[in-house]
Image 1 (cartoon, rainbow, N blue to C red):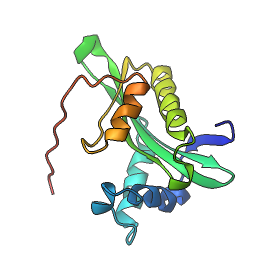
Image 2 (cartoon, one colour; image 1 turned 90 degrees about the vertical axis):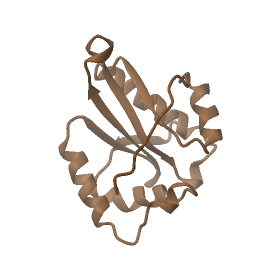
Image 3 (cartoon, rainbow, N blue to C red; image 1 turned 30 degrees about the vertical axis):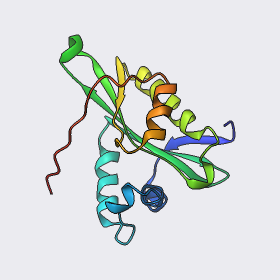
Amino acid sequence: MTDVVIRPATATDVPGIVAMLTDDEIAARRESPDDLTPYRAAFEAIAADPNQVLVVAERNGELVGTLQLTIIPGLSRKGATRGLVEAVRVAASARGTGLGTTLLEWSIEEARARGCALVQLTTDKARTDAHRFYLRLGFQNTHEGFKLPLN
């Protein structure tokens, strides 16, 4: 994917990122492009936090992918820092092109450059294709994740 540029997201990318978030049968139930106000507020918070890295993948001026990498300092594992990958999305027009691999490899290298000892992520149990994808990249299914909705 040499024609793809991975770069920090900007405020003008928010509508395109939201479009990728909603173009997904699981996430479509919890996302809405009708009001971008909460997404814009979230973007500002992410942009202000040096431990947050929100990127987009761009090809020929079109947004074709996104992910967020959160750097988490911690005490466990002898004070290891972790990279948490969230909200990985590839636009429908770019699926099956290797862009997902490019994005994840970028996040792994960025986490390594920031001193992380490991990279972790969660994915919905219903995303069996994603599970196979992450296993192919070397991720191990070592933990069971839990979430508690607060609203």
